[in-house]
Length: 110
Picture: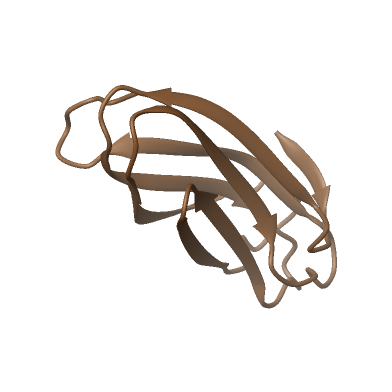
């Protein structure tokens, strides 16, 4: 879990190995304060970049929501996933509980 995210300078990077490239649902689980407005998280895997609007989760750092979007991973082998805020979060910082990549169509590539 990553806590106290509040600035575009806050970034996290993970490396992962993929057997087969393909399309994945990226599930972002996060918490924001009730007064958080305009939070946008950028997810990048290789050349693929997605922006995910994060509406307020309506509570404190322990009230989580999940957002899901589809992203293509175009190469097998070692890949890198990076996440960063595009603009500052007003109010309390963002808490990022996790990012999961779920193969579209049910065949596991991870």
